[in-house]
Amino acid sequence: MKHSELPSADGVWRHVRIAPGALAGDQAIEGDAAIVVAQGKIAWIGAGNSVPADFAALPRFDGRDALVSPGLVDCHTHLVYGGQRANEFAMRLAGATYEEVAKAGGGIVSSVRATREADEDTLYAQAARRLEQLLAEGVCAIEIKSGYGLALEHERKQLRVARRLGEAYGVTVRTTFLGAHALPPEYADRSSDYIDRVCQEMLPALASDGLVDAVDVFCERIAFSLEETERVFHAAKKLGLPVKLHAEQLSDMGGAALAARYGALSCDHIEHLSADGIAAMREAGTTAVLLPGAYYTLRDTHLPPIDALRAAGVPMAVSTDHNPGTSPALSLLLMANMACTLFRLTVPEAIAGITRHAARALGLQDTHGAIGVGRPANFVLWQLRDIAELAYWFGQQPGRTIVRQGRIAVEEATVA
Ligand code: DI6
Ligand code: FE
Image (tube, rainbow, N blue to C red; front, side, top):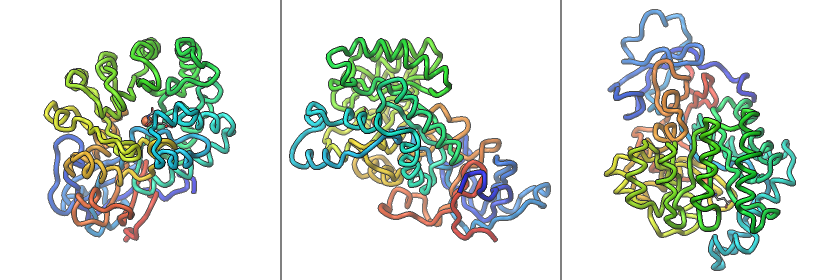
């Protein structure tokens, strides 16, 4: 069903419990609570017995003591691409590393071939199925990167699909241009020429189409150098676009410190992040995005420096990194679980990682990732006793009612 045809969530949502950390600011409400939605926005939140009389005429929804969290935010995905790469999964099981697979002509470039071959509607249909999985868990905002086209028309196709998905599903989509994801085959041994093309042709054209909310680079031995990364950041800055970075995933390239100098929204992966990188991120207010799905798939053993990030007070987000190569994951809740089990995040950290800190990684901290008056109505009523259950169960969908962008997108028999 189209988002615009879903039932309105306008009304008084009674008999809910507000999960710790769910409210914007440092507010908390103990015990029975109510949320009022009017014209798709949160109009009031407070104790269940103090709903203002002005709202008496609105419809009522019975939350049946559900726990309410903000809508989830998946802040790093490569959701739009052609084909799949199960063959590489098999190669890695037989002993090949990610870098060896890439050097053998697989890896990102094989998804580039399939993405170039697919037309826009095919890409849309395939990405829509994936998006539906994420939305069914309560995702209300998502970042979608390009980076499997690596030529103007194909990058445009990916980003157009991302925008169309946002409109059709009533989910906030932030698009990120990742033209500097891998070197396309036609530029073999001409990395610098390709970066020129990214900076001078692709980025300005896509930005003027209104298709770019942020700019990302894969800064890595098997991708682009620090110097090339800086050229892309410089071009982004000239256009007034925020940057983020695939940084220090396989090695310490010094990418995080560079990104921080450009005021990056986030540095993502960061398994090999240095103390200098952490200090620079803290200074710049850059969010650390942890991607346990890629860590798990690559059977990485080099943990991101969680204790040092925590000690420095760098906000940590958690995301799926959904992509066909290193993280074919479509459950953000599973990522929260893995962030705890693999990375030793605390449960509150993991939950903040898929809500408020993820919103911050997208520059959406004033509208998403927390429930607050005046914000768009994005929240989830969970049939759970304890919010820790969000990170505890895995491989199952907890009972839930999802209010996304002012509409009831999934309903768990809560309407009185
Ligand atoms: N890091 C990742 O995790 C993805 N891209 C990147 O720069 C992997 C993309 C892929 O293998 O297709
Ligand atoms: Fe990624």
